[in-house]
Length: 473
Ligand SMILES: Cc1ncc(COP(=O)(O)O)c(C=O)c1O
Figure 1 (cartoon, helix red, strand yellow):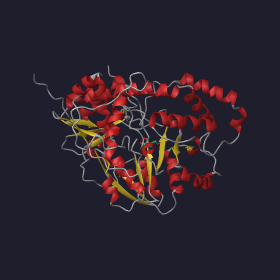
Figure 2: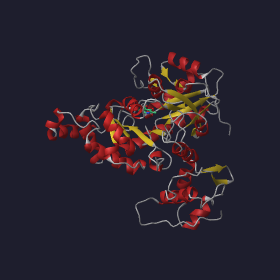
Figure 3: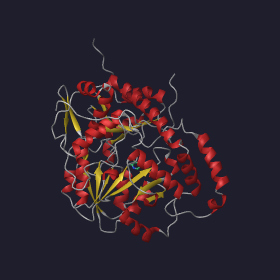
Figure 4: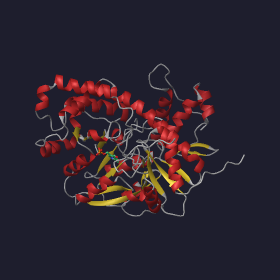
């Protein structure tokens, strides 16, 4: 393709790169830009549209991240094959490091840890005081089983603006964490279901599914996320998936697999997708990947998310968004239950969001985590090619691949003996997969202090006896 005839509006608040990305994406989905087409080079397109090369670069990077195009080094960008979605509307002195709970661990690459230095306590304190002053009586009484309406209103507009999730507050149910909400979703879906879950995947959800006496089928994950072709060959009727940032591999579910997954769900009334969007607020390359829920036209997606990463895990506030057709079942089964989240915290959070502190906090934290990630990458660079990282587009963890004669389990034990906690990816696996992950680790960086990251990496490499590579000029 020589050129792309695209109209961009310069007098709008939508950034040019986003407009360009949306228009190319639309062209790919509706077939105007056909599969395997080579896109114009960044330079040519920027000259043709009179925009900067960076704008084109950002748009292409986003399309690349979402799997709409692929990059062939030194050749260019090509459109990927996207499965046609039957029902999608076509328009659419070394300091002491952070001490962990375990006193023997003094460097903790735990993926669940967050930054504890930058929380806006002043605003939180103000809204805590306001909650007591303004809601005295309500605080003494039980609230809505679904969660406070004002918080659900805030969540619904946040989800629409930043995740493309389409819902009204009545579809939202607030609860005290994924571990509490997931069993609830399972009850809603009925007794005889077969769940497809990611392998490797989030251990806690593995336990939940396991303890529910429901049939579970592990589905392998590669660099494009869950293998939907494998899912299609099973009897599973519900798929639990982390499409925006697969836990733990960090893969983004590619565009063609998104369509394939939605098509799979469309083929049977009893099929559903549980989309766990646990940490997509922190995306470092391009704009956030839109949710599956927003692409879904047949109400097949139950969207699940949490404030554990975006605010704090101790808050214990998460939520799910139900397709409308499941609402009557929800009311029948759960309207006699009380909410598992105190009204006090719900009022504080609602006001915190309403007054714009949540989005401010996210922007601030995104910068902080990005800097930590850069430090981490920089600290690991001298050890390449013995080590490499992947899954670094989003979230607070990356996958570290290590070339070593010892396997990850042994290396992790050795690290622990030296006071360093780092978890092998195999710990998140249900069954062995053909992808060799015996040399991979989950490296959480959210809880590390930025300045201490080089030291933490040095200690880790020292205990594994991995040397820095000497640069030859
Ligand atoms: C895949 C996944 N889902 C959900 C969560 C958050 O769970 P909760 O809301 O129970 O804190 C996490 C936290 O690490 C996670 O990794």
